[in-house]
Length: 130
Image (cartoon, rainbow, N blue to C red):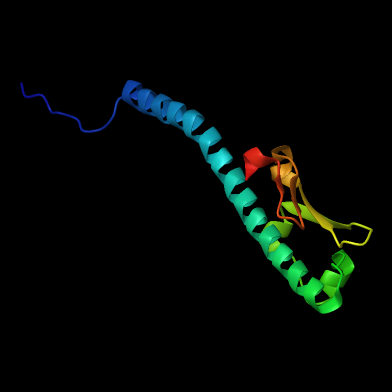
């Protein structure tokens, strides 16, 4: 009698493959999620620095910093990819020396990341996120 060798996978081999893939996915997904959060934060930080540059240009022209409405009236719009993850506010200081305080607040899936802040002196807080 001749025995034919059958090609294919046994159920045990298939279950082991699925278990290994599940373990790899459970290890990789949290790292991927943190990577996405850091990438979104870096995009927001870049945008904050761009707003700070616009504020300096506005200061040279108008001798004061722009609030959010004035900034948007002068053509600034928050990029869509950043706007999906962050909202922003601009607080202006009062007194003889102009001052602004820019805050990006995370929203949606980015919400657990914490606020990013930048002021007119270039101070970036929280320091561990910059």
